[in-house]
Structures are given as structure tokens and as C-alpha cells.
Length: 120
Image (cartoon, rainbow, N blue to C red):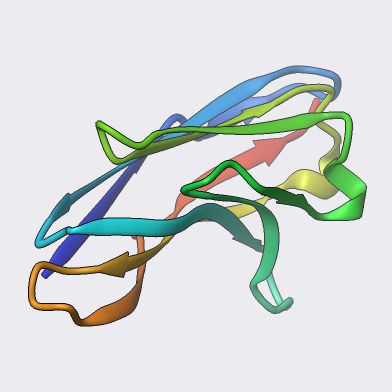
């Protein structure tokens, strides 16, 4: 089994910054893609940013230039630096990992979610 533990959410004023972090642990051989998704009330869960194990990134259009994703493959961690936040960024943010385990079984895993609220 694989566990993803997130941290770093909270309340921030418009224009402010937050950093989300996520650590994966458990039965892990390699993590192909790690990333962040978010879900606002009444909306579907959407991709925010992803980063593959070889360094390819993908960002949702509205966060390009404001958010930066990074990861430490040795530590199985991924972070999301969020700058110039606006109220539309308010959502529950979920960490995601595409994991190949030591039994050669591949699967998708999610964290429990962390709330980000942007409000004055």
C-alpha cells in the first residue's frame, strides 16, 4: 500500500503565497508522475500541475506563471509553490502519485486533501 500525506494548506489573502507539500511512503519502487489536483465546492476535481520522474511538467492554464511544482525523487516528495493567489484558487488540493510498487503493480494514489482558502 502507498500513503500520501499533504501539508501546507490554509487561509491566505489575495495576492499572497502558500506552499503545499506531499510525501509518499509505503510499497514504492518508482513514482512516475506526482502532482496536484484541486476541487472546489460543486465542481469536479481538476489537474493543477504534474511532474514526471524525468522532469516533464504540465500546468493548468490559469496557474501558469503563478504556481511552480517541484519534486525530490529520492525522498518521494512533491511541492507546489503558489504565488499571487486569488479567490478562484480556493479549493481542496489533492496530492496524486502514479506508483509502480515492488511487486510490479502500478496504481494511482491520492492524498486526503488540504484546504486552501483565498479570502480577504
